[in-house]
Length: 217
Image (cartoon, rainbow, N blue to C red; front, side):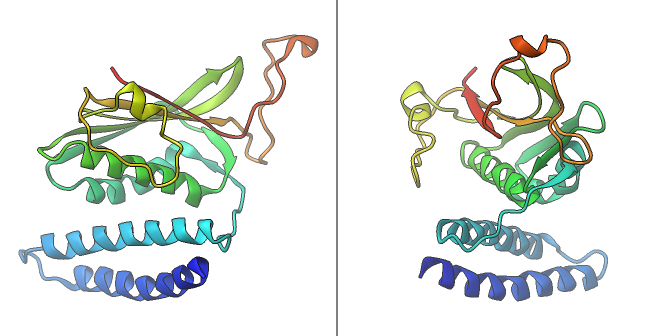
């Protein structure tokens, strides 16, 4: 039932979001654009929540494709800035090109949206948000790291232990947070890039397709 309601609501949001963008595009120069931009940002957050409900109801199709993670972050950076609002600056940094992964790009965008929204809530008085994309190694395997960090309230150890509990949330303060999303590096065809630095018999066993870790400076 949750999936069915979310599907119908998603169709309504598509109409709302489309008309908001058309209205913003037709707005004369010099007019106040902030109310429309706020409405678009709210619509995008509602769309994100709808996608989460669709996934919960097993009605969202997960499609794995090969894409450049760095370019994807650059493409969604403007949308993420709207999520953060005017009091928070967003610095999206792509360290190099051809950072290919094999995943569902919508799911990756959803992760970034969630982390960005959490960063916004942790900085009610403003601050700085950062997204960094680059190569990293995880248990000796090559991978692509999406790092999201902020200057907000952060998380204590008790909070971090409950990160993966459904619908868990908290507003308790700390000293900023860093979240790393690690994805296996892939070629343009979607094949995982092998680790040529280790002899075959010494290479570690394959790891899960995605891992996430957090730190509090």
